[in-house]
Structures are given as C-alpha cells and as structure tokens.
Length: 175
Image (tube, rainbow, N blue to C red):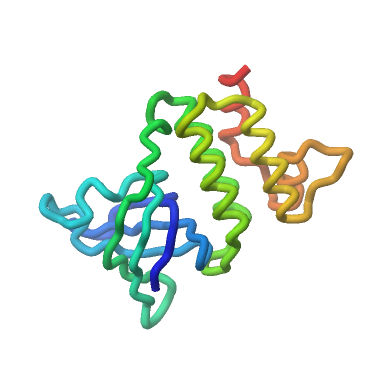
C-alpha cells in the first residue's frame, strides 16, 4: 500500500527497530514497524522524525494492525516546528486531538488534511491563539460536535472525554 502521511508517534520496539504511527490520507491512523531503523546505516536514518510529511510504502500485516514500513520519502520535514518550545507544543496539541478522535485504520482524509494544514501553518508562522482556535473549530465542525453556545474545544472535550492537557499551557504561553 502506498500512502501519504505525517509521522505522529514513534518509540522503540527492539534494539534495532521502531514502531511508528502515521496519520495518513488513505487509511487514517496506521501503525508500522520500521525494521532496522535504529541501526546507524539504516535506510531510515534521519528520516523518521515527528511531524515529517512522507510518501510511504507499507506492506500490510498478515495478522493484527502492525504493518511493515518498507520505504519512505520525506516530502516536508517541517523543521520550523522545532524552532522553539511553543511551536512544538502547538504541533503536539494538534496531533493529540487527531489521535483522540480517530480510530486506527479508519480513513478520514478531511482530518489528515486538517492536520497537514495546521502543521504546515505552524511550520511557516508563529503559533498563535487564532490558529489554535481555528484548528479546534474546523475539527469540531468536521466531527459534527460544534454547538453555538460552547467554545469548540469544550464541544470536543464533551464529545471525546476531555480536552488534551497541553491546551492550558499552550494558551497560557500564547497570550
């Protein structure tokens, strides 16, 4: 399967391999194993970092939901998200919402597009309250939980259990 996605989480599986989660346009949240990715001469070296937008080649799992990452090309590294803590915090907040509201393997191209647009904005501009509220409003609208009498983040929190804890610190640092 070929896919277009953003790296949203990664952690060690073995001494040489990583588990990598992607938010893809084609298949929603996809979990992959990058075999040998932690080796110094791995073809994945330097190409598996948070928020990277990539073209992926994934071999589907025979059993379970952990697929095999065969190949990738970084199309946008979004290095601007690392320029300061606030940028990284805002990007992490956007990813946390997507992770909370989606189920693995359920294609939701609108949400993948929203995440890409949000991260691309933060890559090029400083994080601000307007961008955060716009992301929340768009997300609540796509999911059909927005109500006129409540802030979008509260609508989302009511529908999905809670608002990610990063929001408080993010909004305090922005204002």
